[in-house]
Image 1 (cartoon, rainbow, N blue to C red):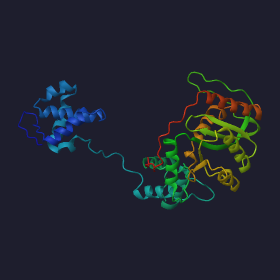
Image 2 (image 1 turned 60 degrees about the horizontal axis):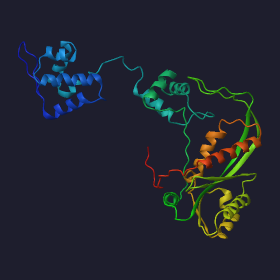
Image 3 (image 1 turned 30 degrees about the horizontal axis):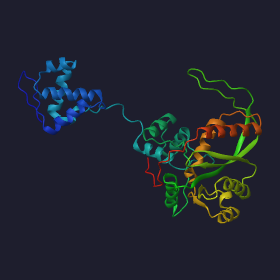
Image 4 (image 1 turned 135 degrees about the vertical axis):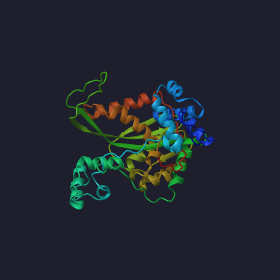
Length: 359
């Protein structure tokens, strides 16, 4: 690409193939900035031999604008189509202050505080760099670096389980390809469901306004459930329990064992809860050879499909429910289960148990 000019003529623009391809792509892109598209179209039109006036009329801009970008491209190439750097106001704080802010934000806060605030960071930097930086300036510098020292995200360090992915894959394989003729169950407990009644009635939703619920409440005790989800049908069998121990759990398994035809094999998914791994439970399972257990890996109870049902139960009944007594809570939980089973469908499981890619 090059440009030359004779007196009284516009700057000539000659485009190489790669430069033309890039400008055409920019001019046709719906994601490019408007100013970048305009400049690309000016240069393309100039390379096609159009005069400045004709380009200005076609693109509805001034002749001076056409002349400016035509000349910039002729002199500097594609780099000339970028905005020139502006001097702006000089920085009030040098790099040492910015480094001190980042170092402070990424270090432990002073005793006894657990998180940094912008004001506390400003005080620390003023004491170390002798620079009177404001809390708002600290906020701007940290925002530019996407640092948020006031926020803390929970994290669970997974214990070292050599067969973690093998166990996860076995559970998922059972969901994706259940043994023919067998019953596949996902079993777990949901404990300490609180029966709470609001002290004052709420207000229904209105246009532009969500429903409102009174914050204060009265406690009426708790209820606990044990549930077995039939993975192949989506139906759920639940029982209210007063104790969450191995004896109660195996009593529930006895009910299931009696209800399922004797000739059918039973495959069950269990997490590592104490009532499931107790000696009493393992002895019961050993005495009932048609029961085959797939244990979820530690800290992976989300692989247990019944958790999907518990999640829906929480959202639909418990979270915003109003219960005048423990019996009222139990009645509503059981009513939800009955309604669920009337239209039950199996969950559509697609995960195969392989490691997930980081987002």
